[in-house]
Amino acid sequence: MLNFIKNFRNDEDGAVTVDFVVLTAAIVVLGLAVGTAISSGAGQLANDIEADLLSQCSNGSCD
Image (cartoon, rainbow, N blue to C red; front, side, top):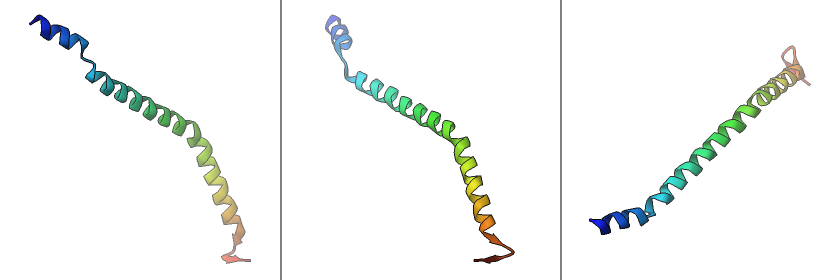
């Protein structure tokens, strides 16, 4: 029983899994933060492009 406890304490196989989960969570959070930061600017840019394209064709005819 004592050997089992010593082996269990020295076993580091699960550490790789924990590191992978933490790293994956950090990447997901970073992606969400970047997406949130640029979402308003991207929406405004899309609206500007739409307005410019609509102003190119007036009265249904494009020149």
